[in-house]
Length: 422
Image 1 (cartoon, rainbow, N blue to C red):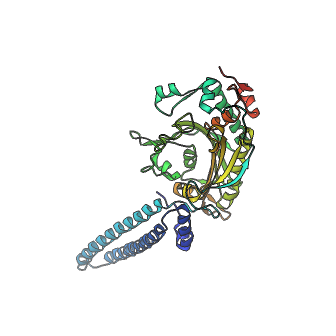
Image 2: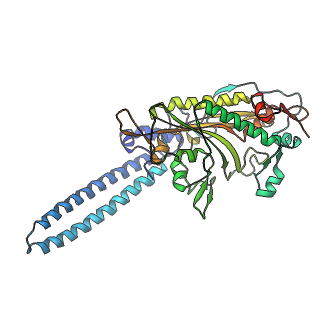
Image 3: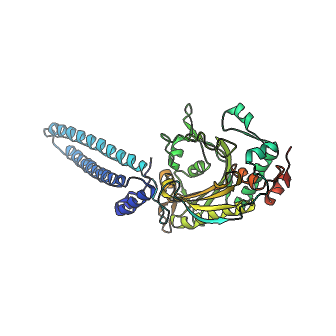
């Protein structure tokens, strides 16, 4: 595992990293532990280097020695070789300790992000008018069953809880949403990708997931592969160990894939319908850029998410996620939450994260600066459409008889203006 935070930055700005830890609700003492471990590592490297140089010099001395002096010098060289070996073991142990502590240290929180946990987000804006219905509101599952476009029972029969079949106009509605998102991604300069949904452990870990302790991830033990919960993972690994060309601006990819999440610990929560499911589809945006461009690129990703939500005519709000809910890799995260009438609240539909250099440092993705010197790139990601959007689309566009009006922007792709109950 490569370093996840620039140790030079840590040594020069320990208070900034401690502040970031407090914003996340994490222990700032980890910063001091890492500084001590880094000092020990540097001392161990210096000691090992000195002994290796001494050994090299001593080797020349042996080569120039007389026949009678050589046995004593060889014995001395043997002792020196043992010291070198010990020093190299100490160096490896010191480096492993630094690496262990680094893996525990999340990305630096961007200035301005709110402190606190899951409920401490800041609402930045509410967009659109929350609909008022003159009839009893139905939830998305009741609407979908009335229109015969979603089959949860057979999903459970075939695959177990939290699986489903989208059928008929339901499948077409999701495909229409996907096609619209793909169209918009291409218009905004993204290269469209259909990435693998199974990835190696080093790719999952490099993106910022803790594969040993994250019970949300599906692991295929026989093959030691992981099912992705987002195509961000594969797209982040796409340029692993490469130097990419950012001379003409950010490098943007949009990935379409099925995504898999165990939803461990959420039993009894949103078990009805397709709000929390084990498999769903998503169109994801992913950007590589220079670190100084990341803040502006983050705003672009958020803008493109908002554009899509406007096209499907769903009221939403934009929230600034608090430090304790950012996850390991994000420095700043904005969510767009769509209005869900049956729950009388907003629910997450999109999320966009600025991961700064955190992922690229772990995955060794670099670019050349103006002087031709390799530098670590920044990475960002954002949702452009996903299966959960169907919940907000169905509920906000429902009619008294259970029909669902198809948003105008989706009609060319689905060939329907309204999905009628059966």
